[in-house]
Image 1: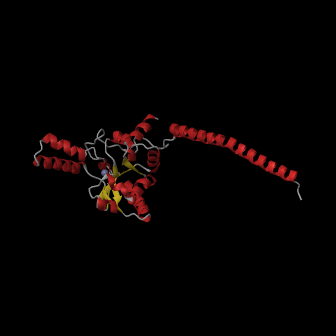
Image 2: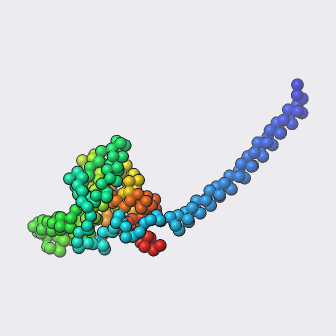
Image 3: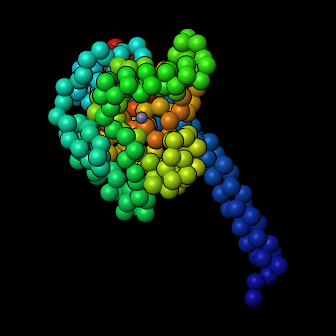
Length: 252
Ligand SMILES: [Zn+2]
């Protein structure tokens, strides 16, 4: 049998061990956090310095830039292939198929709404829209202005590259056949947006203000552009637009 004194000694010892333990843990904790913070800042600095994909160049075929400031007067030459009645550059057929098959495996059927559009076709759509507005009583200037809010001026649409697709979950297209930003309410569209980079595609016109000011185009939750896997993953990870990415590549 232990005496009272021995019991008290034991209790005191246990209390001391606990207190010392707590002190040691609380002493170590902030150091660990600090160390973590230091590693994250270091890796961030490194990726900003040299993280650009090594092989990428502004003159790569998959990085061709077409927008209002970089409009084309003539057709870009490439091998045309037809998929689901839509033409596209032969080089994106396999990546697009892989992308859509993966969506299908995840449970999402997809619809290819549009791919390559010729400058002649863009001109026709553009002119028809102006004529329609004029027929409804607008002046020519008013008709042009209204048309330009919805339709790219001929030569400035990325669809003429054959590398851009309007792709959506079949359920999203059923609800929004005219293609609306809100299509991203659908799980199918969210899946496409999230997984596009793994197949070499980027969501070309993101929704944030910075992106809209760089692309000059409002958010399009359905428009994907092929740029290759390395480029797509870098652009997405760093929240860039193609415009911004090309300017970074041009500066290195
Ligand atoms: Zn599009």
